[in-house]
Image (cartoon, rainbow over all chains, first blue to last red; front, side, top):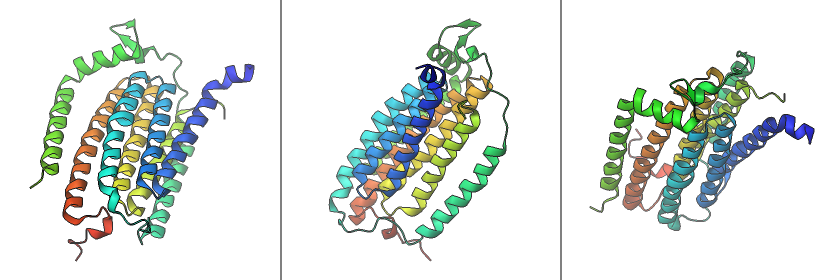
Length: 177
Length: 102
């Protein structure tokens, strides 16, 4: 029990990191796109847990809502609409696959050597800056809200216009001619 | 080993990113390619959150929220294009879109 209490954060990190990576591997290897979508959901939820472990409560919950809810439903609908006519014996991978995997592994090795060799300063002891509004410690959601609506108001509004444009674009693209 | 540092997060994020890149280049099904793009964006968000914690600065979390908004728009438009393509060709295979090949 003492071991769990002392190292619970690390154990949870390794658990959810393994789930995220395993889900991602299933996404790009499974045959049926429906199963791929569910593996993707596993990855989204595991990444949300990793956000929570880094004190980003609001972003973690938004990840579950937007990715686990919205985007996942979108994917499932399209899989159901599109995939009925795909032949069951269709090949999963393109002919360029070996080369593509080699390039991806080279990328992994290059950046992996860079990241493992880099030493960052120890994480700060005082993380209250992540949940402070005007010098008062309240909570992560309040701090994000104040920052979003005060310091980043213009980008926030631009994002809303962007989403409107994306919605109109999706409707126009999906319309029957 | 039991102290989780920013490096741990960077490595997990790098692995997710690489898997996403590989998925984009390898898969034949357009839907799975779009899923791989979502994986890439998730890896980027993981980096932003890790550095937000490392620097005790909220800006990384704000940026991650904007990334999620862009990912939602990208998914909607991408799947709309996919449906239009499917209506045209009755298939969702990448190698059936070869008009621009020289």
